[in-house]
Length: 443
Image 1: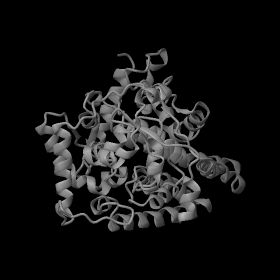
Image 2: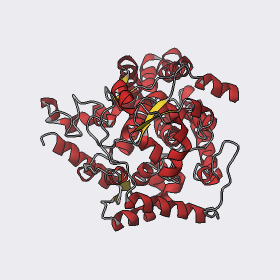
Image 3: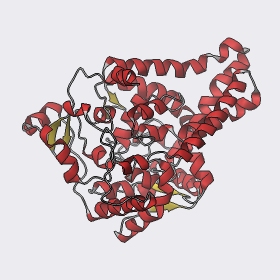
Image 4: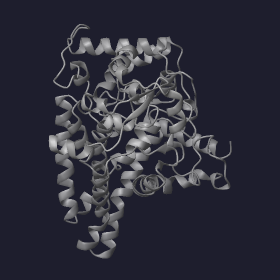
């Protein structure tokens, strides 16, 4: 295990990041960071304030800055010019809303796990017990184990050429993958770096973790619905206009009819091919998020993962006749892509969520939808993506816990006069999204 992590994490460069306007050299801190090295990679040579706040909800600003005070650099202006970072769109100061939200959610979990504020149990790496308990519980791991068995049984019959297995493979692959992969890329399966990294590579269907970090964790989660900062707003700008920052073109006039093509191609052609290769060539994801510098070992893992993904397209042509081979090659990834788009586009892309607020935490709440939070069926089908507002406020908490804190988050938002978007059904959320796409075709 340690040899594997060493293989991925040997640094040939320094780790510098800007936090609350000051620069820090965290190269030495990589040896002591309780969450491992990878999270520090994500904030290297960029502003790391947003990710720092989101992934340390139970630690105050003073505590976090105190941990890295000795790594603080003095040449702030020089480094700002050197790395030429864009201006941050948010005020990262701790608002009354943020302080109460974090306090009440922390108190909820302290009560849930029979802990007290004075409880200070840490493991050998310095991880606090509370941070460990909000990751995937044993019962969730059992669910994932059962889903894994169902998935591989389906794959077994699929490779035998079974048509029923072909029909259900995309749905089963989606439910299997979304219930752990998304959490793993937010370091929410475990406090152990090896566990999270392993879960990231248990399914090839979503995306390369390397690309997903840039698209989703670094770009989308920090700068949700911010034009030219959130890469999810410009995946197919010639075909779809889903934000005012995308220039209106003649091809957008009837863009509602582009949805079937865009949704079926989004994952296989968009995320796994065009954006992936374009990001490496241009050193920016969707020409927006700068690619982080990684050692050659991580790029090797990335390339091997891509080869495995694209081999699933080739395999059927070696074992089936041509018509069957085309169906077995294309139907699973295209239908998987449709399921991904159904569960992802409805979370932020509606007229009600096109809001902005200078305060970071208020903005996260105002730009997200929570959909049918009481439905366990929707919860499993979306892998907890339907509890989106809570996820954007606490991405490091495993989605299994988010349903429990949803009423609490909603009430605190209402108390602070922050718009909380709760949609009763997925169908209503889908209609809201379609109406928004129509609006953006001419407005």
